[in-house]
Image (cartoon, rainbow, N blue to C red; front, side):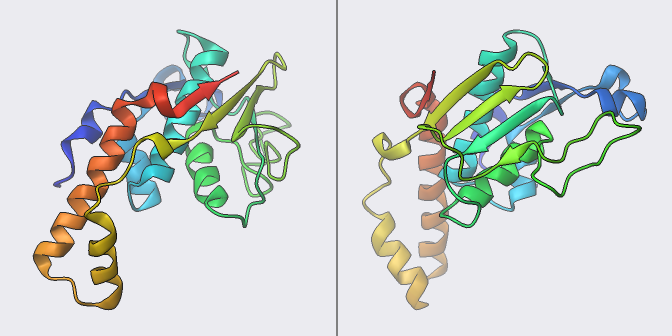
Length: 197
């Protein structure tokens, strides 16, 4: 399997999942989610997928510090409606990592380990997303803004060629490389694109 090598350089998100422990999926319910796993689940790597990963990573760091984040114990709220812009894509990535879902998630075992009703859209917040630990009610707001990491000026002409069907195999290859180059730059400059408060 060939993919951009920077995927391997992105720090994994370490989790402890009580449900996974009970059901014997992972010893102590401990595992990691990597960026490449998120890319596979999303079907692509882009600034939106990278941003969702970085937002979640920053929020979990703020809420759990050096401890493993406990999957299934987080409520996540988004400012946008589910159908607006890329909110759904971001929600899917955040759900993959945290376990939080709106109504479609796991209903629980005897009232424990439920994952549904932990994700809301159109929230009254002034950030990209708010993450709240349901056990402590501690919250962190996260803003993601990748505008300071511009795309290559070659991208727009190549995009036009792709959309018109005039792109050569070389154009397609270059477009993909430049696209992933911007994603890599976003990860390398995460302190510029992510703010928590």
